[in-house]
Length: 127
Image (tube, rainbow, N blue to C red; front, side, top):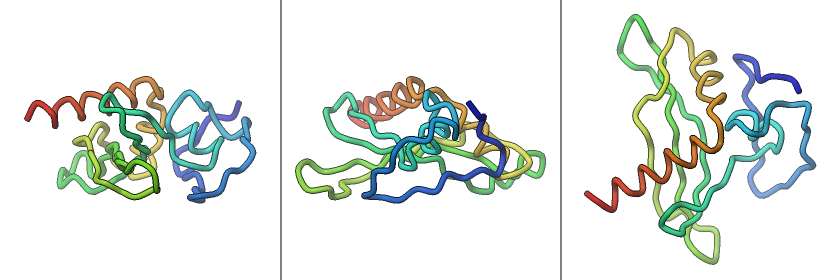
């Protein structure tokens, strides 16, 4: 299996299902899953709702670690695919370049992404 490299951004086509390309990455990680399947990973949260996950980046304002990457979860409505909201983490990775932080967060195992989503859902319910 080829590892996802810094700068690799999987092309995502929403609403299309392509045959998996298992040579594109390790589908047990978030970035690898998106590269192999050419779509965001999807999860059922602890609230029973459907969520899709993406890696987003932004500048941090910190000269030593100018870029940060975080998880962004789209919450889908029941029935028709309609966005009902979203959840997002704080920066989980920071570094000198956007490509590097995206690659680092893309290496997160899907089980950890799911646990992060469930923690965010629980935090919203407890707030």
